[in-house]
Image 1: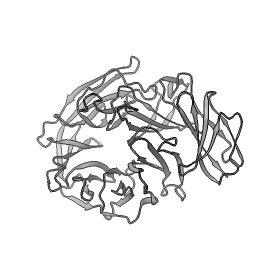
Image 2 (image 1 turned 30 degrees about the vertical axis):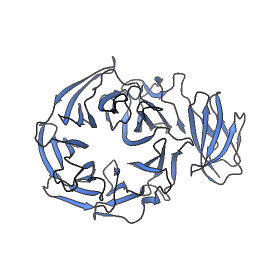
Image 3 (image 1 turned 60 degrees about the vertical axis):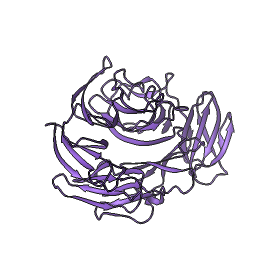
Image 4 (image 1 turned 90 degrees about the vertical axis):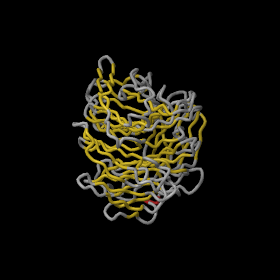
Length: 460
């Protein structure tokens, strides 16, 4: 069962530990309609198979946040809040959420430190910043019984190599790799590099010169790959770094790119996905240093205002987002290399005023797999209990029955292309869908409070 739930503050108590696979996404606010950052949340209870999802504001966290990281020891989610709504200056504050129980940030946070990227290693929160010191490690000390959190600034490397704005951070084993863009406005500037910091010895242990502006880092097998964007006017360059080798191999990806640089979170695949400047998803093979011809899975946005934004690969699913900078479409596809083809839709949030996520953009995701047994409560729900929409049967033939809160004002039905194909005003019985072609549909229930609930079903 798949439920879209409003992110609330109360707890849904259970009597057993839950193994959960979750994806969190950081949604950008816009100062006005969405004055805070948002948190997208989709999790699977491994024991029951129940899927739940939601999105809601993270109060007091500034819009335009840039990153998020999860600490498996304390089970806290850390997020970066971005711009200051009053001055427009970059604040880069870091907040912590006891995410399995609440979306309210803990009182302790790192205020206005210029944070850009986050990662967690052992008991350390690693933060890259856009002002000195450019890299800082904070000791995480959390007491779940009292909800008290201490973030003690532990150390910052003094290496002269750390002298610019780090836009990429990757932790592999005991080493943090940091991408430094000394002068991304000058594509001829060869002073950009990837820096390696041993987190146990607290020493800089390596550096590799790359093409300008290495703003993204991923790992595939025994190598690290830097997405180097230069000034965003020329083609994306991809630099291969093998930590035991001093030389760097750089390939021209063949296309201009403005972002979206991802590979399988397990580091198993030999493919890197990125959006080109024409909103087409491209696949770069690290085995031969070439970009495959044509769009990957034929994914391309060809009609304004659909602009490609985020891409994320998790096991059997490929997540892609599009935006018109007012609303966001999140589409989740099955990975054709892991399950039988064709790679049809797993689930979808239609967008652009037709039942979309609402937030202007969502581009940063992380995957979390954890046991929430730290306490006997888990799951995020509204104060009155889970708010959900149930639809059955699936697949349906002529009619679908539903169960929803009593204050539903209307139902809207969308096909897999995001087109509205049905509407009902306060229905009291099953909905007739017998006239529709076979396929995947999304039913939206709009409540009097403005909340929207979603459920998908198949039509034979």
